[in-house]
Amino acid sequence: MKVTALIENKERDGFVCEHGLSVYIEYNDRKYLLDAGTSGICFENADRLGIAAEDIDAAFLSHAHYDHSGGLKEFFERNKRARLYLRKAAVDYGYFKITDTVKKDNGFSRETIRDYKDRFVFVEEDREVEKGVYLLGHHTPGLEERSRKACMYQEKDGEFSLDRLEHEQTLVFDSGQGLVVLNSCCHAGVENVIREVQEAFSDKHVRAVIGGFHLMGLEGAGTMAGSREDIIKLAKELKSLGNFKLYTGHCTGTPAFEILKEMLGDQISYFSTGTVLEF
Image (tube, rainbow, N blue to C red; front, side, top):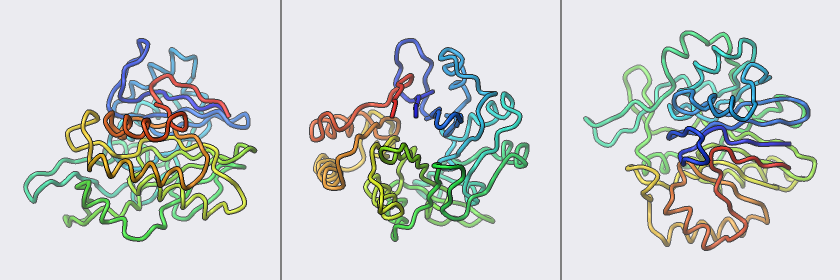
């Protein structure tokens, strides 16, 4: 199994970058895409890496936010056959809502939903989509409180409600030597994502967790939500959950990553554009 970061926030070695995430995965002679960043420029990096978007067999949308779904239009134009697996709630419109009058559309492009809906496969339950490839929804109660802290809301029929994260899903691969878990932003909390996977696969162990941990502040990846003590508490909790590797970036933010690195050492690494992991 090989996992490649097509795009992430930090510039590296001449790759283009943006606030967003896109991951390419090779597994059992199949090729997969997880998310497509904000604009589709991730495919410029794919070209440089010798990865052909038209050869991808299936795509997954981790959640409905623009910095993961914005490049899907470019993907669908390059690839005429791959289906996109997503949660049904992903087509409800998401917002960052700071106050009643200050809100920002944070959701999946209406145009892409309209023009490419025939390529969508809606997933409503946990399922094995192909041999050894699984999609899990969230089952942890009380996730609305995490959305409140992150100012994340959804709008349906003109009504706003706290985002229950029903549009977010976790992608899991059975590597044969443990589970490789991908959740692009872990809005439910990376510790909860790991517990959900451990509960769903009680007979297997987690080998690696890849994705953003949503620890940055509202002003971007150079800021941090919460306190140093909050991040230290999370690091201790992650240690208690098992001896797996963590690869993170994007919405984790630089300050939080540096604290996690202090606490976790070699257990955690930065997953920057162009990074290739093999399992």
